[in-house]
Length: 238
Image 1 (tube, rainbow, N blue to C red):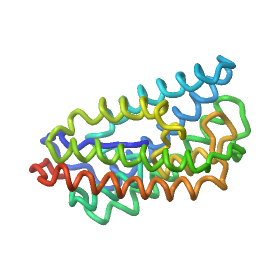
Image 2 (image 1 turned 45 degrees about the horizontal axis):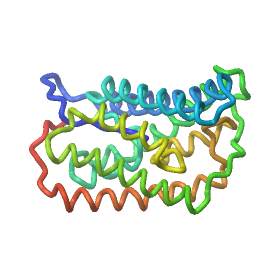
Image 3 (image 1 turned 90 degrees about the vertical axis):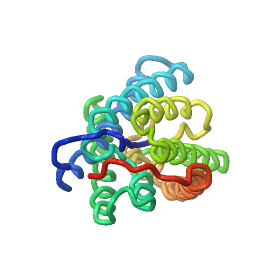
Image 4 (image 1 turned 30 degrees about the vertical axis):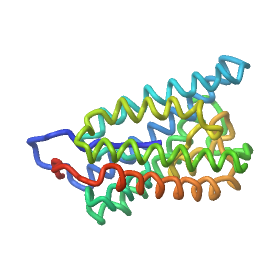
């Protein structure tokens, strides 16, 4: 899950690399805390799996909207290595950002998962036992990630990135229900969710298959962007 805004026009100096990386860490940690924490809360509040999923989806969508809106002007609010990679591949971000961004995203997602565990009085580190790597779930991750990359960069290349917060949050909220995997669509949060044996967790053995499916989905989404939105508008650069 992650994100992703480029249309803010700022008159101040561009944020430094340290500020941008820290924003990615904070955003990734916050997003994972929201996903994992709301999942734990959902199971505490209801025994109905449908209600649990609804609570988890709404909290994630609302939180994602806030995080993109607040942190977008600082770092672009990626929170997702595949978004960072696609951003660079389209020439919207320098290569020097890729490594620090991805490291911050992965560490942030792990930290967010540990924080959520601690807030709900669970073992701080508790590896998930939820095996998710079925063919249907992996196909769902391909679809979810392709859709995410497609909507983000179609908005960017058609000069409508100011809609990113609302569109991405709405898409992820919907994808919780129309994909069997509940739309992880993000390698960093997939790794992070491994560290919580809770409603939102994923077993370590399922992590690499999920990431593989997400990479395939990102490549498909990227190809669709290049095909359907080939012209890139002039954007404010950091």
